[in-house]
Length: 252
Length: 274
Image 1 (cartoon, chains in turn purple, yellow):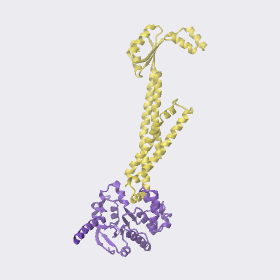
Image 2 (image 1 turned 45 degrees about the vertical axis):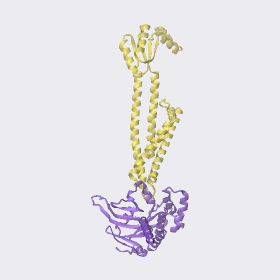
Image 3 (image 1 turned 90 degrees about the vertical axis):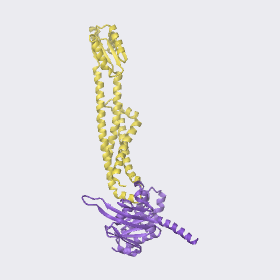
Image 4 (image 1 turned 90 degrees about the horizontal axis):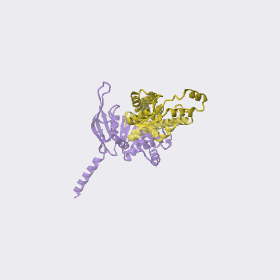
């Protein structure tokens, strides 16, 4: 009887396990079409990996290893050439163009260059992300100060991006990425323009967000950060995944 | 710039409508007053003239035939110019030189030529003169002018419509380019496609709306000017404008807004990558 139960629970756990995958890459190949007499460029070659819900995954590789393309593929800013990408069990290539925004609302993205609107204050930049989704004013008034508090920018709310330091700008970008309460945060070289001290702050913030249950996918070539994290690391080299290690360290 | 061209287009569309209205009016006036006067030789007996009149009534679909005898013609002349003594004296001197006349009203303008030809060929001996050609010319020249004006308005209108589509298209394309960063961010934070397109289409809509309002104001100013007596063509333009007000409003707004929304839609389809 006991063993029977455990079998059932194992099966059901297996079922759960299946759904617990947040992002799955299945032999994803991406080539860019030929451009002006040049041959087509291969960016990713049969890349496969899985990201569990709530995981913190670093993707490392030299510049041009395909990290940014990989992130664009998850957002479907680019389409895969071969293979498929599952997001929470759904093949994202099957999502019709007009419904892509639903996928993007479940993903928060942060970039090396922050991509804040320089004509808007920190508060407005974050509120804007809610406004474009047609969120009611009360929700904006309630949620924006909350995320500002999480990233520690309450006092800078009325400042414009050019008045902020790199670290503060990136925290504002993180606040904007958090505003939709996303399932996944994609961070593309978030510390690329920030000094090591403030980089640590940013990474700690990402760790904090991850602890609260959000899956984080961090693309970086910063050795110190990866080694400091002690989380799973996937290494990209020559358009391929060359290693996938838990508690990994940075190596090229 | 976009607004100027849109205003011109809207204005032209209304002019096209008004030109048709006004020319219809003028032609109607002329048709109503138009008839053929057949003047007979002085010696023609009254019975013969009346016979011709009956004959014409049988032959053509006429609105009416009026016989004016020589005596009646003289009397009506006397009634009109009775206070002119010199004229009256001269008239007494020469006697009644007025011809007996048949005034024929035809149902259709096109019949006048046939009637005129008929009278001329059958009764050439007794007909002195047929007063028809001048009216015919007037009517035909109005037809001619109207159709030319309409054609040129139409051609200009089509050209202007195309120009305004291109210019609005360019305006929206420019603003898509200049908001490139913002569009990228909108996309990132999950704005729906129609939310992104919407803001540009609204921009086109506003352009069209402003243009329509300006064009209407111009039109009303023109109408006001005319109703105050400045009326170079002798037309009741203001009456036509207010008589067709709802139609003109619909025309103006649909031309102005329709064209600019159409071209912003095309621009958004082509240049806004969602």
